[in-house]
Image 1 (spheres, rainbow, N blue to C red):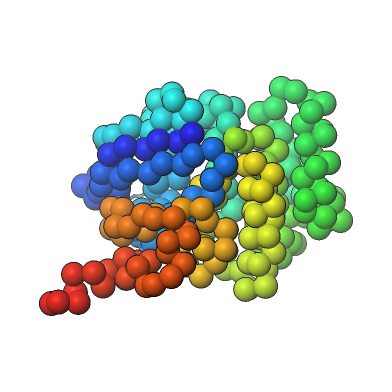
Image 2: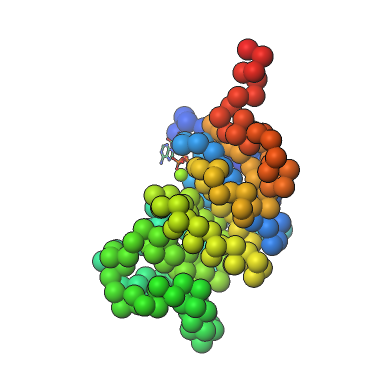
Length: 240
Ligand SMILES: Nc1ncnc2c1ncn2[C@@H]1O[C@H](COP(=O)(O)OP(=O)(O)OP(=O)(O)O)[C@@H](O)[C@H]1O
Ligand SMILES: [Mg+2]
């Protein structure tokens, strides 16, 4: 579904992504984990069309999309829940959700989707006319995911869904993501923490300093320390 090859992204002289290869097949939940500054947000922003790569290819459903306009990519089935959520705090929950529906031309279906999303996140129905800034962190994350879902993505990308949330709240967010993935939605999630990743992931990429240092199935990574070692960069240090 998504095929990224040899992707390089720079901010001026700084190379944030350096020859990255990542693949996401339909129905998968692929996680990209890595420490601060590894290039995770850069990766998602580039896929979403917010950054123009210096080199490499991004293909979505067989079409080259690198450098495409964000709105066109969104209409084309790619939605991003950005780091820090970016909800409109002074607007109501309803107004925030209507932003997600703005790109929809099929208004009747969009309304049905709204009902479905409110079913998935009942708190948003309860707080529908309330100010979004008054929602808790976990509720705001649900709102951000709900807003992206209303764009009816085929691939949903989420930048650090667990950021700043308490463990129990993260559990709830991950449960929703699991339900969405089980329902057939393909996910590409980046996380700084590896803690929950294996609960949901089908495959995992570890990136450090803009490079993929490990990729494997979640099943294979569940035993052993390969993921931690790649994350912290122990490999090569063992015999130093
Ligand atoms: N707009 C920018 N201008 C210049 N450098 C940037 C910009 N955005 C990110 N960078 C740099 O690019 C590198 C990768 O940043 P990125 O935000 O992709 O990391 P990240 O993996 O998402 O980190 P975090 O876990 O802290 O969110 C970092 O060194 C960062 O300082
Ligand atoms: Mg980031």
